[in-house]
Length: 389
Image 1 (cartoon, rainbow, N blue to C red):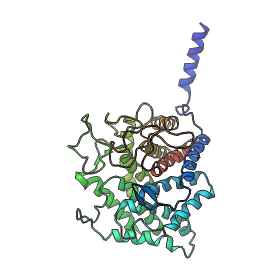
Image 2 (spheres, rainbow, N blue to C red):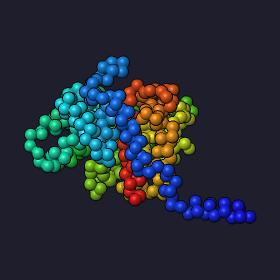
Image 3 (tube, rainbow, N blue to C red):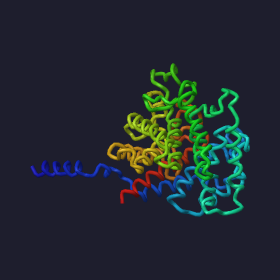
């Protein structure tokens, strides 16, 4: 009788606990894991100027490395170590604060590195420090060039982002340039490019009814996965989700652009929670059973956006906090190795089939962007846990 009564009391206590009490990690735990993962990368790639060599040599300003720096910038925001800034500035100085392939490129992948350049420049601009225009000028020239150059493949001045990854790579550059210069032409052009991808490319890459994105025009209907479901690539949707956050972070909440992006962010958020796996990950293909397995990069990007949304008060914590907790617990439990290596990371590509088969031990073709995605998710989850105090 006493055992039954005690069990009943335990059940009552558990159900009466705050809805967020199931989170096992503390903010300090999260920071320690983020440091572990980043230290693994910085030790392995000690010299940030050395080119990558995956099948061929590419400069370290390519998009995969640029995404890593997005994550490192985020980590620097919660873990104020000078060595992070030194690593960033050595990389940026080596590349002369210039987009990959020069100021006349219109490729979003080439422009991604400018997100970090502008992050470095912004506090200097606010302090009105002279003699620093060299940090800004190449990106300024690059955007001005693109804003006058139609894409010859489709004839549209705004038709450059034909794949949804590009929204993450380049759209925050336009919005940051607007914030730095105060010139609205950069924001206006970036928004028009976003709308072109959303509404026109391939008939529109955003499925408003389902709240998810097709990767490019090759994957819109009638294309289907082998089980007959739509092909919504996890990391591709993660790229867009992260881009929305990074852009809204630079905008005033009352602005029409913020409200426009927020509408899509909420649609995506609602869709994402319906396709999270029971183990806390998301599949490489979000709604399909094809390649049903954990995938770390998309999961980390979704964690990043969901935590940001809760911290901004635009996502209901009672609904989304368990989603975030499961995502973090899954990655720590099943992806993070003792030395900081990340498993279940999909290699470069454009759909769920890329880099298969994934596993806990398989090393993807590039490790940098996956680390960046993880650091984005970890730092925002850390902030969420800190807010609980």
